[in-house]
Amino acid sequence: MLGKSLNSRDQIEFVAISDLVPKDHLLRKVDAVLDLNFVYDSVKDRYCLDNGRPGIDPVILVKIVLIQHLFGIKSMRQTIREIDTNVAYRWYLGFGFHDKVPHFSTFGKNYARRFSDGQLFEEIFEHILEIAMSHGLIDTSALYIDSTHIKANANRNKYTKETIKKTATFYAEELREEVNDIRLSEGKKLYPPKESNEEKTSRVSKTDPDAGYYVKSEREKQFAYSMHACVDSHGFVLDQHVTPGNIHDSTQLHVSIDRLLEKGYSIQSVAVDAGYKTPANARYLLNKNITPYMPYTRPRGSKDLLKKSEYVYDEYYDVYLCPGGSELTYRRTDKDGYRLYMSDPMKCKECPLLSQCTKSQGKQKVITRHVWQSYIDTVEEIRHTVKGKTEYKKRSQTVERRFGDAKEQHGLRWTRHRGIKKVFRDTTLICACMNLKKLANWLIKEPQLTV
Image 1 (tube, rainbow, N blue to C red):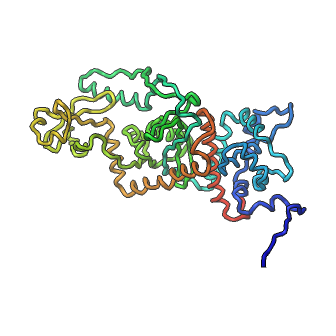
Image 2: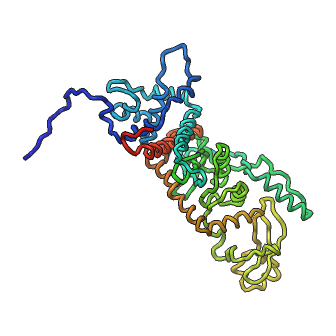
Image 3: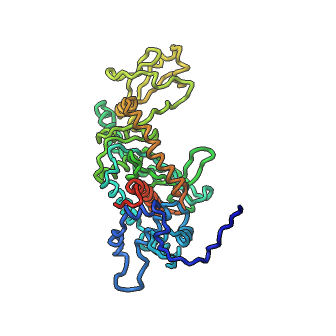
């Protein structure tokens, strides 16, 4: 029998808005775990308490932006449209069926005037972490650090070439002092401090000068930002910061670790990818008694020449032994911290392996060894342990998974904002919402459970 449904569009019913929201809806869980009343104290100095018209409730403003980032809505204009028709969103905001939703431009003005410094969103981010910690959901002993690129809101073809100053690396002075100690013991002239006016030519976007020009391949050239994030073994984002997209990962490891240590976190190990595997980073972590888990890195250089690993280093005599049986002896240490080991060209020119060893016209093989190479050697020993292999594999289940979620579900693949401060505020909110979603789903297992 053919059935026809009745048209009940104009049916009048007495129903509470709460009855229309599913008991297991994410916003019910979020409302149960996150009390936003602390926002009033955080923003009270940004409102006039005894003059003017009453402003929009700041908690409502925060909840609106949480809805946008929890559900990956692309814009505030679209978010307001969704709230207008979505019963669950209205319930979370405390609105009835006929309450007027703030206009998206009204939100934008409040956002610019009262939340532009981003401090409130950082407070929300930290507040969510504190709740998770109070329930024992966060383990700061083992951390996983990586970065991901965010496409900037800028045309890659609109740029100027400008000469900018190079920034000194965080370990530059320590390295110079150690190199000079070596040169002093050898009776050689000391290297002066590096000049702070070293310059380089870089592409600067006309649309968003804060973004960095990022080249991954011939097909992937764009202005971008990098979000550097630190995640625990349970997938909670503990810290994040943003840099231009052309800043190398290796320069940002100490920034993340220092921020976490300032917060009082106890860190036992850190797993990172090959981009962070430098002598300086290995030394930094090991000197702080943090176990580094780093991957195997393929040998660099010409493929038709012998690999550096085929030259054996004799630590006792401080020489390298080549496959032909000759020694490469130490000559000097350069200003970048590399010890130079050189062969005897008189012996090399008679060696049958010469064509596989070097292309030098002087028939001399040169091998470099960083003054902090011993730290990399320690990292290699750790890498071969069972623990080292296990911990490194967890990166794909922790930090890489967080990046995937952020890009696919929360709009991190590209940014609508311009300027590094605005992009940082946006990434702070995205990370806060990912943590909040995980926290809510973990704590609220049953519809009737409250925290």
